[in-house]
Amino acid sequence: MAFTLLFVIALTASVVLRLWLASRQIRHVARHRDAVPPEFADRIRLRSHQRAADYTVARSRLAMIEIVFDAVVLVCLTLLGGLQWLSELSLMLPAGPLLQQMALVIMVMLILGALGLPFSWYRQFRLEARFGFNRMSQRLFVVDLIKSTLVGAVLGLPLLAVVLWLMQAAGSAWWIWVWVVWAVFNLAVIWLFPTVIAPLFNRFTPLEDAELAQRIHALAERCGFSLNGLMVMDGSKRSAHGNAYFTGMGRSKRIVFFDTLLNKLNADEIEAVLAHELGHFHHRHILRRIVLSFAVSFLFLALLGWLATQTWFYTGLGVMPNLFAPNDALALILFFLVVPVFTVFFTPLASSYSRRHEFQADRFAASQTRPEYLVSALVKLYDDNAATLTPDPRHSAFYDSHPPAAVRISRLAAAAS
Image 1: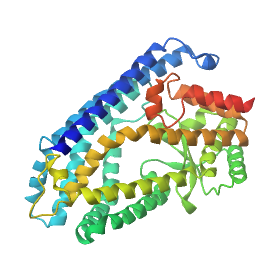
Image 2: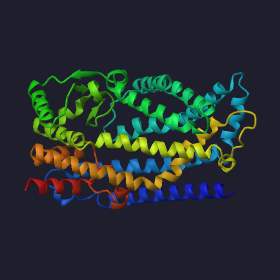
Image 3: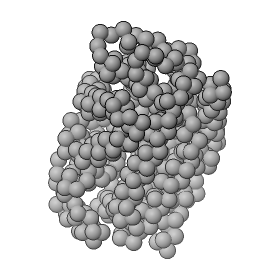
Image 4: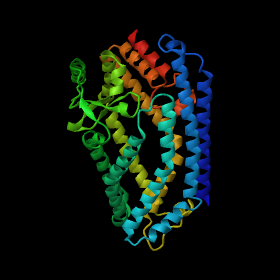
């Protein structure tokens, strides 16, 4: 079939492209492993640079294995009949059509989750541990898995039930109603995350450094940011990586520091990092990304609304649509399995869009604090997080949501002069 051939071509092209980019990254980083870039020579030791190179190479090699493995799983579920078998199995359950469809989605999600679990375990307890980043115990890994599964069930199962019901009951315009539900659901999760969801996994305490808190509140006030919380998260119980982020919306809006970040940066550097994050707020980047995600989801749901009525969409992917039962769950699963095969080619557009926002936030930070403070903070974070200073240009242009270190530092250095 034409669609089967198109799917195979797209899948092959996407796998080859990602493997090629990963191999370029490995070769480029390894080639520059034995010399620190001149602009960082007085700030980062050769040993740290080599550690970052080895860490990047190890992650890229694991990613290559995952790319091939995921492609094999996808083919098994589609063209080799895995989803067809699961669909027939779900129809044998002694339940109504809605519960049978929910069971099909749940089975696929559990299978994909189980197949991905060994990679998550290896990444945490082998790769991250080898480079000194893992702080998580085996017990915590299992506890996190149980908690995330339960949270996913509590939030996701009602949403799934509503979506499948709308697909069956709301006529040909069901996808518009699903989009409305999806948008409301996402806004609710953003609102609930900092106060309800995140505390299930981490402990959050108010920032105890009064002087630093005062500086941050003053910075937020200068930037017109209404701050309702300044919290420290115990990120060190899982990883040595440091970070800071904004979360929530409305009255639940807060700034969260990883405790590891506070241990690595001084007050000037922390203020500069926060100024960068406030730059995203100043330029309305978060709002724009939410609006863009809603617009894209609207278009994708419109596409799904059409594809769900096309017999070739099912048969071209190795599934026979049911004649005496709804096919809504099949349509959902096939769509979310297959869409990434085609959308991966648009990744550079999303990456470029994100990098432009990062440059804007850097410029804002340079106008609110001294640029050299942000430069110093970034160099420390690159060093501590083993981020490569010499990424392959094409790999970086395709994937990286943040500008390469050398480019970002040079622009900030120019702003400081």
